[in-house]
Length: 149
Image (cartoon, rainbow, N blue to C red; front, side, top):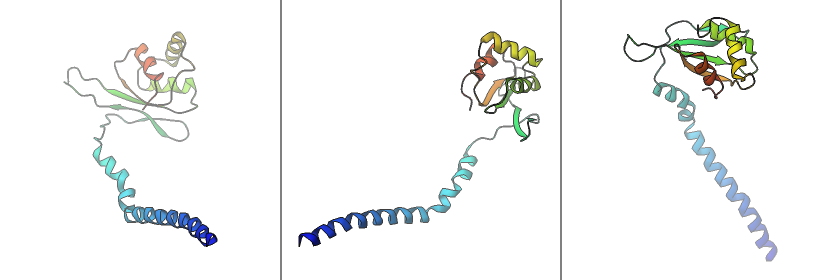
């Protein structure tokens, strides 16, 4: 009799686990379309960003590295917001070229010296950075040493 009880107790745990897995599978299977449609639903709820000039492309993979985004406010005090993407492992020279391409710095040497003067050569983060077109060199350096979007 004890042997029969042991078999029932051992098998009941496995049976309960299989029932839970089956129920979870049925729920996922019945909602698979809604789960797969979530990225489109989420994207539709986000306000699109208007680009006022073409993106600057660099590198072999031709990913967009920067673009001007329309600012808000009056036309007299309109400031463009610049989106600059810094890739992981990208050289400081390449990053400098991106900032020169969007006219935040006039030369790559100017960017490199600003980074060196701030002593942040190894602190530049990767990601997407939104920087106003009228930002000072100090503000640009402060923005890129904080984690990007």
